Length: 133
Image (tube, rainbow, N blue to C red; front, side, top):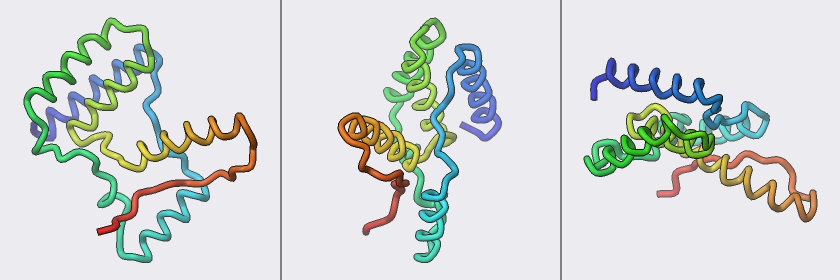
């Protein structure tokens, strides 16, 4: 898909979210993230080169078809979690929401909430991608 088509699709997806009062996940801009960015910079990396999650050239037509089918369901859905998830998948499929740190942040945020229901001894932190190969 060319850049103009990607931008048009992104606009449509964001309009769908706005019409359903759905916010897409976002990474907080906090001290932990600032320290993470400084840390990876010390090793010669930038965040943008570590973030991609999806090898777009390897997405099959079946995967694109499944995302399209999900988007058609999302148009009529009142389930905000479903709409958020399918739009995020669609954005990732075109390289617009491709952010591994966002996935890690969402997982760690969920775990922190669960752990904190038992005890509030876990400090806030930012978990980010770092290459290990």
